[in-house]
Length: 307
Length: 307
Image 1: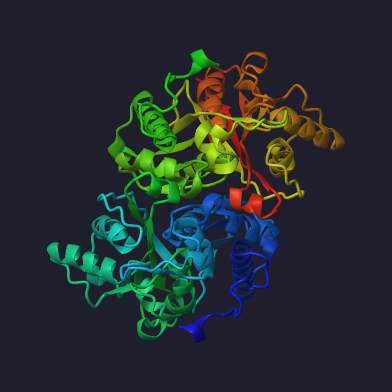
Image 2 (image 1 turned 90 degrees about the vertical axis):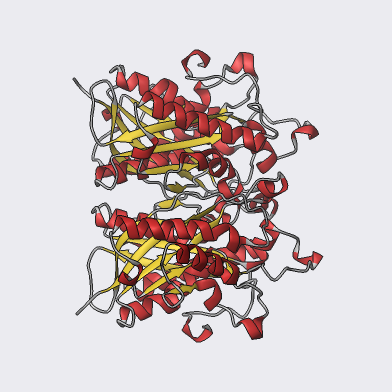
């Protein structure tokens, strides 16, 4: 997917002193790029809906302070891009804002440090583990519909689903039940079946989470094997990159949306997509205190705009 | 203020195994109380807008999972109650939801551990430090206006303001410029002057932050000395509780709003209040890496409903 990105960094520090500042730099780049590509002006942006995985959202705080845009800080773990798009679309659709940004980021090194082990420890990773994506994606949402762009036509906001999973090295298993719940709720609310969508795209279930999701769906009589795609399985080349079950992190679904999914909706390859970023709600404290890992998934319906 | 609270815990662990679970228990109690007092049913709640100070919002995740309500997880540091009320009111006003909850919590022990020192270390605190409030406040927002209740009639969402403050033991100084900016923006946007409000109430500036805010306002020709109130200065008894500059934490403005401010608006003592929770955007990582502490403040206009 490399050639699809607007900008690729060669330095995982982005020239900064530490990884957190590097992740902030990614957010800044992504926001600037969205403003540039959308032909927007910073002063016209009414709100910024953004978040990341770090405690107290420091990647977002320091990455967006220079934008000088009113900020709604969001945390939905790796589902944050779905939360940001949902609230952004709600604000624009209601007429509260004409232009807003929705953004999320993650960084492999900041996330490992935050959730698992110091990188220098060099721990081994089970095959169920995913590899946090280093990247940021930013979408500009505006009230005027233009040919060649895409539109958000619905949302289904997830509730937490806790099936008692406790393995932070198998987040696909923690998130799959939430993805299942949100997708089922979406189909029920909109009174459609799964084939109403050209693609149903989850955030970062990875291989194991996808298997669980497809099993759950099969029990409901739905065959998602062709319809379903997972950003975590698309983003890395399994053979060459040795990333085990796939990619993860807020940045995973955000960069896959911006680089791969949106262009396919814009050019009409896919007319209607259900985009379902998925999050695993844990911290190192909750993990160390023996808590389970509830999942959450926020769905956004994104459609092609016909000419 | 003790007698004003709906419920007072005698045990700072709420009978749980650790402080994080105790904070979750406070959120659960607050949500249940709001549902009970509002005569609502869980199944009628369309969205929950909630957050806390902890990394990855674990107090919120584990405190609200049993509600089974679609969750928008929010982080605005101690301004979170303002963010939750703003987004909740936006959703209800647009017709996206008829009933939602807005909630925030903090706990002295979880916050000290998260941001400063282990409690067992017994560090001394400078007089500029504030004492994190252990408490949760939850507001039910609904589309139908009833006499004897209060209504949200406007919001001014804050942007980050970074004046280079780096002292995590003086958060009032970090947040006061953001409070100033948001209040000025509100007065400008609504084309009113400060006397349009019966009270302008900040979240947790404390004594030092209040002094800075009043100074900044004075430079603009505004005398806020009588109009201004700060939840952080109201919540504790300075003489008897030895809490230095005041109270802080998401819970500070949330519990002061629910127990003290809203009843005064409901009974008409105050006809129109500008409620401005204030947040300091730092984490232990950003602090240890030498970053500054940007402030943010989200203002909500709350008015008395006449008979």
